[in-house]
Structure formats: C-alpha cells, structure tokens
Image 1: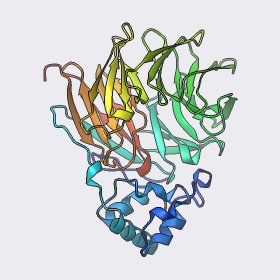
Image 2: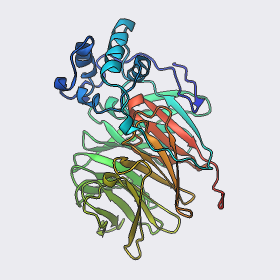
Image 3: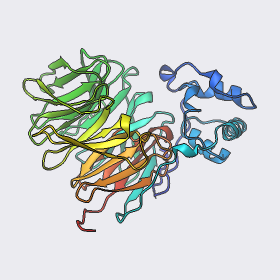
Image 4: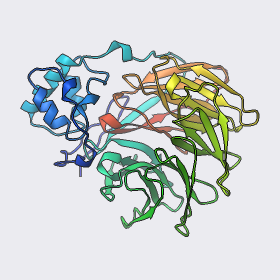
Length: 413
C-alpha cells in the first residue's frame, strides 16, 4: 500500500510506479513536426506519445527548469534517471514558461487552504472528485478506466478497475453508498458496489455519456455531448429514456424547481428539462459565440454559468430570461471551465491560464479574488461542493485531486 502525505498549499507525494503500457487505448498519433530537433527529441516522441499526442507539449504553459518539467511528467510515467534527465533538459530548453498564459491574480480578503493528493496509478488523468455519504472522496481515472476512493482522515487510497473500454468521464454517489459513472467510451452508465466490487452496466443509445446527476425523484439524468442527447436512468428498473437536444450538452444540475438545467458547449443556450416529460425549454444567451461548459444554481434559483469561449461568467434569470455577464480577471483567453455556487458565492477556474487559477466572485459586491492552484498545470473540469461547504477539485495533468477549504461567508468584509 503506497503512503500518501497531504500538505496544505504544497503538493502531496508518494505514487507507485506506472503500469507497463498504461493507457495505450487512449493514445493519439504523435505530432513529431511540433518538436524541435535536439537531444531528447526521440525519447519524447517514443515515450510521451504512448499516452497522448506530443502536440500537447508546445501548447502547454511550459517551464523554465528541468526540475519543474520532471516533476510534471513523473506524475505520468516512471522512467530511469538517465532518460528522465534527458527528457527534462530537452523540454526545459525548447519549451520554457509562456508569460502570456500567466493568470492575472486578484488579491482579496478571503483566506482559503488548498490541499492536494497524488493518486496511485500514474497517467490516469483523474477528474470530477465527489464526496460520498460516508465522507470519502471518489474520483474517475478516465484514461485508466478506473474509479478511486480516498479517505481524507487516514490518507488511504484504493482504486477499482472498470471495464477497459469504459473510460469514465464523471462520477456521482448515490444515497445507498453505490458509485455511478458515465462510460464515455462504451456507451454505458455504470454502477459500482464498493462493498463487493461488483459492476453493473446499463447500455445507452448515446455513444458518449458525459455528466450525470441524481434527481430527488431517485432517477439519474445525464448528458451525452457528442451524441447531442439527454438521458434518464431508473435505477430500480434499469430503464433508460433518451431524447435529442441541441449541440453538445455538457454540465447538468438540478434546480430548486426540480427542473434539470443543462449547459451547452456547442451553441449559445442553456436548457431546462422537465424530469418527467423530458421536454426542454431553451434560454438563449445573446452572443452567438457563447459556449458554456458548466453551470450551477444559487439559492434563489438564479443560474450561474461560465461563458468559456469569451472569458466571462454570467447569470441567467430564469423568470425573465435576462442575462448579465462579467469578464474574468485574466481576460478573453482565460477560458472559465468548472463552476460551483457556495453560499451564493461563485467559484470557478480559468483553465486557459498556467497555473490554473481558482476564482471567487461575490455577486453582492461584484468583486473577484483569485489564487493559483499549487500543481496548476492541468484543468479543473468539474467541482463538487461538500457537506461542509468546501470545494473538491482536481488537476488531471499532474495526477492530483484536491480540496479547497472555504471559510463561511461573512457579508460586509
């Protein structure tokens, strides 16, 4: 059993060696033309491309030192020192830090604490951590087709392997302790019984179940981005109902009015779906360039969303249909991604920046505050609000899940 150490604001350590041939099914063709000549190039081409395209490297934020580059890729693959040193030196020489991608951080009066933990299997691209009823934290390792469990009290981690083709995109806990996931690559919704390890799969018509949420009626609702569909699964009967919708439905949340609110990453709209009839009402967002990945809902029913394509966050009044938007501190290329509302304060990240920036926006004062994620070379793609009002996050590229300790809101400060 590997040992895990959590450091406040610092990064957790202690992962076992990578599995041989891990994630071959997730590999993409190498983009060798993107790599300049030099010692180490062929190692990068042959080793890095086993899991992902080398085109990711020139598009990254970069690092100025070999030490920083090595710290990153050692969360992806376990190499002998001579190979690791050669690759790190090559990357530091040809791909230094890009100043244009540094976030504009805004000071403020809120004090938070960020904890991060590295997950066991290297290169799995962990994402979408959630809190189960027993207080444990679960995540999906999409590229390794697994889900993991973390006990924040003891630091113990365990991983449950799923069908190899599942590649779970998101995860959601049920009240009975079971863990449900979206099989993004094998067109299934899956249920894991942690007590026995048993997996039950429910086939869907949609080829790529994406994000799921449980409704108070006990049914599971989900989006399928590339299929352009929304679905409902009845856990009691296994029956799945699906309907076509507008392009690229993404995030989904349950509102206080019991409707399912849907973010669209392929058109300028937010949808509201009736849980019984599955009929969808669309709320247009004025700028046609708008693309929305995630949304959440305030206590008064107001819908908050990220306008990812334009570097803004926005608010939709579902009664009037009116919207208002605010530019994110790092500007049009900041690409806001995840979003959560905690005590009616909006928390989101600027995924286009390196390091990834966590941003707080208080609607009462219209003021921003932001922080750099300690291991912020990845992207927070989804967040989860715990029962204590903290925020669960992740950094896929650096193989980490995290928790943001957030103090209660004190108005007027």
